[in-house]
Length: 245
Image 1 (cartoon, rainbow, N blue to C red):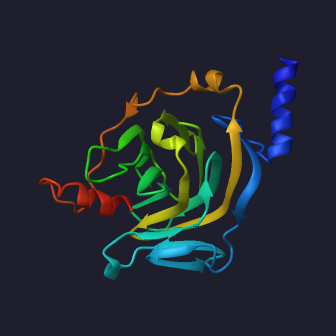
Image 2: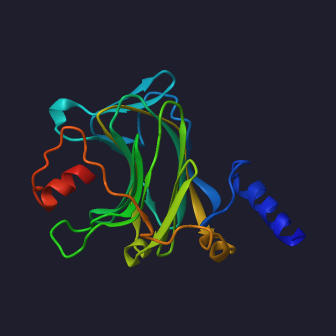
């Protein structure tokens, strides 16, 4: 017991873990990039869609009606094993996500609405045969105030955490190079602060941690129909691609 306690204390000291965090899938290491997001959005961030601005001392993302697409901003980083952490606050938006791309197309994301948290592998080709895989979808009540997000990817594994909601999954796609971590916003608006990316190694206690978490697919609540969405059939993978970006 003393050895384990000393090991965890060492991790917190070396890797800069927050006092209320414990290693899950990954042990964070050297900082790749970090920002309080308390200045006007600028390089290395690159906004693809939407309005990104400094508002009330933090970065705010908002969808623009004329874009006909959710707001998107990304970093140019190419990654392998890493931990991303940040905080967000809904300011009227209907959704937000932390998205990770593969070398080509999407790889994985944590999708968040005021009523749900979804942790998934993304559809990586949009023309078939690959499909998105939802590892978990939790009902949630994400009202006013700030919420913490953490995404960990090591080897063929990913783990997502929003406040106290945690899930993990595995896929061979995750072994490939990861790229362009970024935020999406559907509607107006979402605030972001205290963003960091760190190198990572797998937690040697992962098997014990995994035993305390839901198995992939075990906690998948039905997806809510967005307000105002058509109840008819979807428009196929092209529509899904637009939504996911």
